[in-house]
Amino acid sequence: MKKFSTPFYLILLTFAAVIASAQTKTIKEVPIQPTLTNEGVDLFTQHCAVCHGKDGKGAGPAADALKKSPADLTQIARRNNGTFPELKVEEVIEGLAAMPAHGTREMPMWGSLLEGQDHDKTMGKMRVFALMKYIEKMQAK
Image (cartoon, rainbow, N blue to C red; front, side):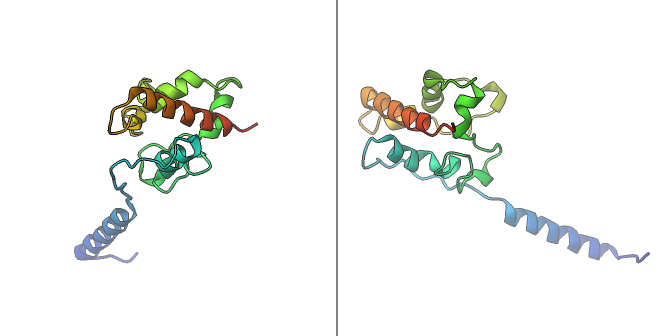
């Protein structure tokens, strides 16, 4: 068995640390931008797809940087005995639903952000509803 000197191990450990840190992804936070429309598809594309993916299956470009993988939004009804829980989904989007099993909440709480700069609660609720209905359409049959 070949013996290596102590500096070799230090070099090996340093090299491993550099590789590990290079593989760590970070998410760049940017200010929320208004969508061109209030359609669910546009809201989803702008606010959700970066983590959940355009198809809603949880493989967006930022997903690897999260501590917990984003949910597969196409399976919500299946996980709820075939029923899509509209109110629960709206509460999750708005940041009102407690999700203790998930630990800390990495998903942005879009409720207040969807109200816009004018803090129009009615418009915010309409956007949350449109987003929820779009996610409902994603459900796998």
